[in-house]
Length: 149
Figure 1 (cartoon, rainbow, N blue to C red):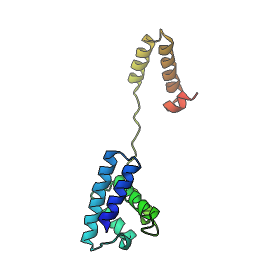
Figure 2: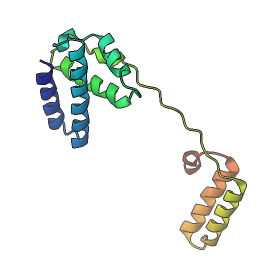
Figure 3: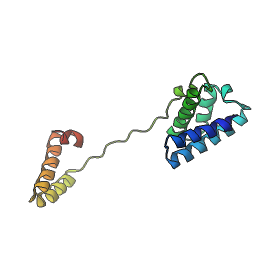
């Protein structure tokens, strides 16, 4: 029963103009889900419970946001077509992503940048670029904030 719904979902994704790569990824994830459910002896999507989906996502060594997203999309499709009464995948938490630490230019790098832009400040565009960088440096704002001044 699951393969039939997977086929219908993938056909729906093609009609909805998903990219070929997205459909390929969804197909891989759904095949992995089908294999996982076979090991649990579950043959119907109606018998899948939230804890099964959590076990499936936790089964990966490094859980991916794509696994969670694929499940949510598939179960949304099943809910829209009234195959199941509710989307049990909406509660699956997304894996946490590590935050990156911003990198800053050193004083030497700032001086080199200003010198480079000063040499090109003979045109209006060159002068504009120099002013933007000078504002950015002196106000210690992000580039987006500097550009909105």
